Length: 280
Image 1 (cartoon, one colour):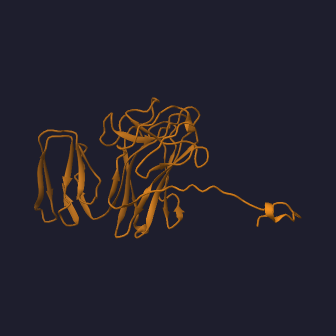
Image 2 (cartoon, rainbow, N blue to C red):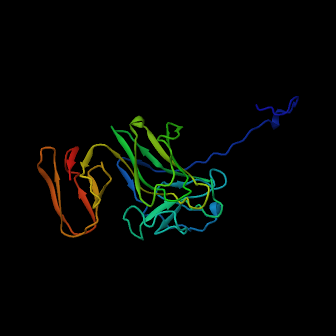
Image 3 (cartoon, rainbow, N blue to C red):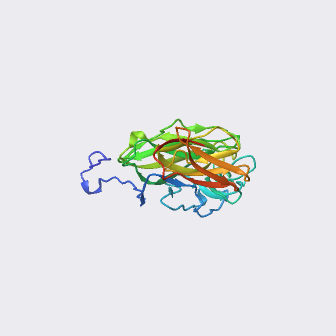
């Protein structure tokens, strides 16, 4: 019983209430990846929590006005405000590619948005790793925090919060999930906008993989490879889309895969190979 009023003998009015937000979700196994290309475009109106953006595939924007202040928006190309946000998504990296972002205009400053991932089953994994790409371009950039729900308990700030202006570039963040092996987990992104409108933080290309098959890359700005490591299926994006030869070597220096590439986006399938490290 909760007795708020001393000497109150009426026990029937002693009550306390709370609101539970129950989100139904399919449980996904590993490996998993989502580039948000199957999300529906949402309005980019600068009305803070006045726009509701419904995601899909088990992804959820929490309720504006009760759980948080505003929804992350699904967008393509540039954000409406100059000097902040990306010009294109990370993958496929063109004007039609989709990402989610915080629209910080119209006094939506110091405001929080929370996005929940689906539930992932880490049973059978040995070294699971979370990877996502983020874009924090703007003179008044806010903060990105990552939390994990496991066994009914939230672990907040599983990495040091990301904050500040990183420039007009997509950056990758990897998080070791080994502490949660065998459990079911949900990832929460908590985005807090900065002190002014130049605070359009964006996210793209989320994946969870077991560190089983990986490719060692010679660092080169002419291409990018993702997810890496993976279950054996890799995406290779090339800046020069003609006359490319792809060779994959094993640890003994033997070629285990070779192909030619004459487009900017290539899929490499190594799922028939044993787990291990290979060289591109």
